[in-house]
Length: 166
Image 1: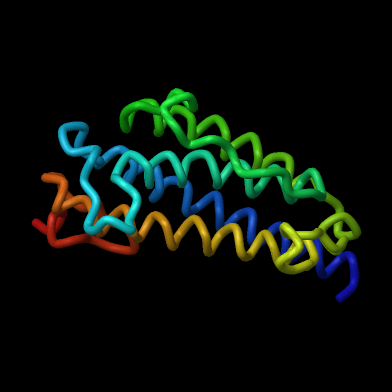
Image 2: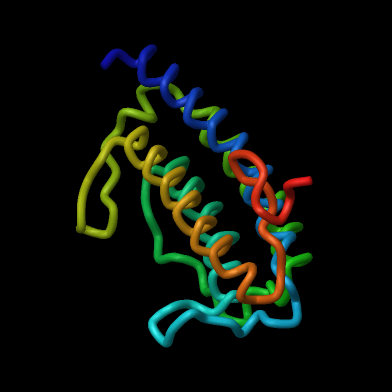
């Protein structure tokens, strides 16, 4: 793939991620604060743990691509400062928006460079950008499946939900 093609695909993926941000914000904002400790089973993250994972790792993943290197993932304990959905929404808006600006600024050559992902795999930044988008949508889907059990309503994601139909 030429560097021009790589840049074109990268711009498409960034625009696609930007579209998903609004949906992710709706899902984060729909998390009820009264049941943040909910988890479907002992192997699963709590609602708050999953909220933190999405907020922190989406920005981290994108910034790692922009940096050309992955550092250890962020601490998602209480020390991260995300204690409720409002904290999450504010942090996600700022962190992911800034990270997307950084990735959008990468050249085709930079998006084509190979990045080591914790010695598990190496891939071009463009491939990791596609993986970051899938990672975000995957965990948002998990969180949306928690919402009703947590006492909340599921917002429209790719169309209306049973909770948003008139």
